[in-house]
Length: 544
Image (tube, rainbow, N blue to C red; front, side):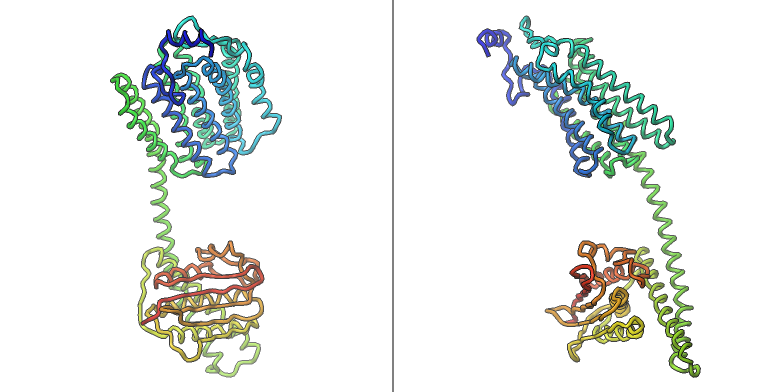
């Protein structure tokens, strides 16, 4: 900096900016308030949206828009604070480029939003080509001519590009967005038209308010009033929050509510640092309008969602009650059929020829499967209706496990599978548990192992470990991919739909997990992968 400029700075008594933005050159705290509020809110929302889905081009683009706006706000604040002409020239020329760039990004954003896909390179070139003259001429007098040293206002004389071309490009972008939205709306459904209207309105309000600061300040010379333009970003965020909650555009649940709480907290906190009552009134009025607009939209959306959840809860309860009734009604007749078939197989109804005996055996097995299926749906319904109960008693779980294994022998023979049981001799394994629920757990696990073992064996082991009883069911079947194991304990999940005998409710392992955890136990699966079999583990507290 030469001595003449330094002397001019001393004559004007400009304050030295600290950290680029803090100085007495900024004549009012409302300028800091408007810039920091818009900057912090926009970059926070933009970052949150990006982190929710980093792969989404729409989310990336929205983050870029909010980031560029934040850069614009910082650079504009530096222009208010700095006393150095070279800083003013650099940041002023940067703002001249950033403003139309934000307009171009908004046009790109709305195109992707409407078409649900990225645009061609040719179209991108068409959108961003108007920025090329600004970039080329940025260091020339066509953008900024000189720093005005005729007064102490720290003004810069703008050239043709900054005075006329930039505003012309911005107007073209605004009309481009409006025409694009109108063309899409003409062929859209009623719901899509609402989305188009809301997102377009939000972007246009944002862009107009971005430019309104300079327009209001230039026309009125009231730069305090011009700060209202910076509140365009919160208006855009308000519309965006409504879109997200209402239409789940970005799949970010409750981001609108978070934006409202964050913005409201920041607005209230900022009042503490504003001394003039006139400025306080401006902030309070804006806060009230912001809360009313965004709050109304969010409350309306939340009320609708709550109503839908209540209706869905009633439907689910009715469905669970129906399933409970239907399952109970199925068990009775099927139990009768199973009993009659068992008597026939035992010879109580006379001698059966081999072919008829084989048919009766299959009926017995399938009726047993159907009874298990009905029991699973009945228990699922009881869990969802919070009607499940447990009858705890002392018993030898090893004896019950052995009985379950024997019950499966006939089914295993049909599939030519060897089922072994190893109880470590005659040792007793006492537990305090619900005998019926535990037998159902073992039936589900062993049945599952047999079902997914086309050939080979299923081995069942029981042992004591410290204060626990450990049951292990190991098969030589299809195996399970490690990443799919956690999903197996969810409702209606199946391990392998390619297996021919893979029918079932998909509830067995889910119920097993519920029952075991209700007994303060653990259940898990280990498998080396497809074709390498699987091992199921159940650990229960031992009776001391």
